[in-house]
Every structure is written in structure tokens, then in C-alpha cells.
Length: 155
Image 1 (tube, rainbow, N blue to C red):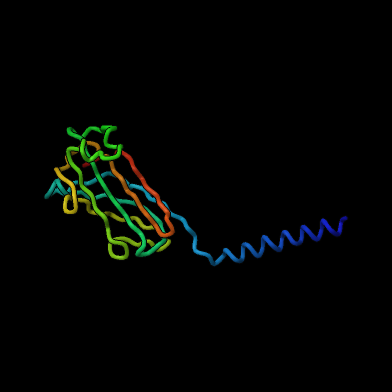
Image 2 (image 1 turned 45 degrees about the vertical axis):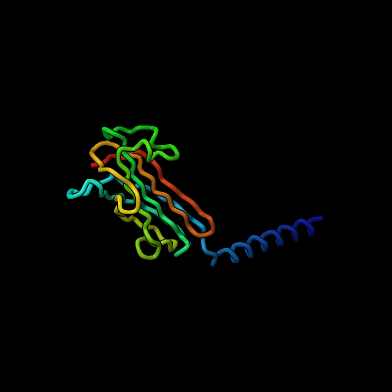
């Protein structure tokens, strides 16, 4: 019986070791997105702003990033901005869809990067000082998804 248990323990250790060796060279599937600091309004055009995000992902050109800033009238943190279709209740909405490989890198490394959001694609209005609902949504390869959504100061 002792030999059998010892043999099973050795087999388990071997299996764990082989499993670790097999995954040692594997590509991790880590994805994370976060908003860093405040939204900064362009001093020459209030329909343009800058959002800094910190992220990590994999997927290269299969990746997709969406950065959005929605602000209610008066710059107050209106909870209605959190909902689906909230651009209908916003006083201003600026956004961007940065191009993978050109505007951002989904290469398995951490990046802290500032993105320009505006009304060029779709959006309206001008941001003012106060609060706004910021969405930083990242789609990596292999159906990975991470997002940071929060009210942030607009300056």
C-alpha cells in the first residue's frame, strides 16, 4: 500500500511539473483597463478632450478600444449617464475608437496612454468643468473584455 501511495504522489508531482512546463511558454490572457486622473478639456476647443487610460491586453489587430465621455447639463454627476442609450440624456458626448496597432497596442504589455476624444465620429456639444461619465472599454483577442466606467472630474 505504501508503494502505491508513493507512486501516486510521484505521478501527481510529475503531472503538475509537466503541466507547469506546458504553460510556461503559453501566452497569458490578461486584460485590464483603467481610467487615470481627470478628463482634460482642450483649451482651444471644448468639443475635444483627453482621457488617460492604463491597460494591458493581447490580440493585436483583433483588439478594439472605445473611449467615451458623457456630461449632463451643469456638469453634475447624473446617474442616468450610466445607462444604455445615455447619450440621449447627455448635454455633451465625445468619444473615440482608437485603431489597434496604430493608436494603441494590445501586445501583452502594460501601457499608460492619453487618448483624444471628440465629436468627429459621433457625438455633440462641448464639455465644461464639473463631472462626466467616462467609459474606457477594451476588447482583446479571444473574446476578452475589460472596462473602466466611472464619474471623473472634467477640467
